[in-house]
Length: 170
Image (cartoon, rainbow, N blue to C red; front, side, top):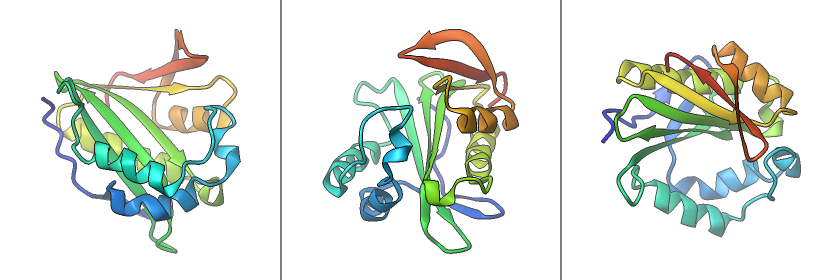
């Protein structure tokens, strides 16, 4: 399995805490704005839904052992509020990660997605992950801008109406 160690992370304006069921109440507030689901579909999760999901993610590994799951709650250090989350799914070989970032509308436009995802990618890179990719809806300009700032480029691969963006180095 992956060599990546899922430790808490810090950056200039953020603390990235390992996501646990204890974050569910705060995260439900951060994820409550329906605007977050414009490109991904769905609706804001309930606290109970998040508790169940986060309990599964706390294992840090898929049931079949083929993936390592690393999920961090993003906390803004200026107000200590949960601003969203970042996640990485690392394949068993440990050399590739699928990554994602979600920042609450109340914290968007401050560079927090770039900063949080950048901290996560740095951790992955220092622990042997060589490639990273993210799936982004073609209409989601803000997420595309984050990806570009992080060195990702769009590929020709499309799945479930999203474009795969990749970068050679995590």
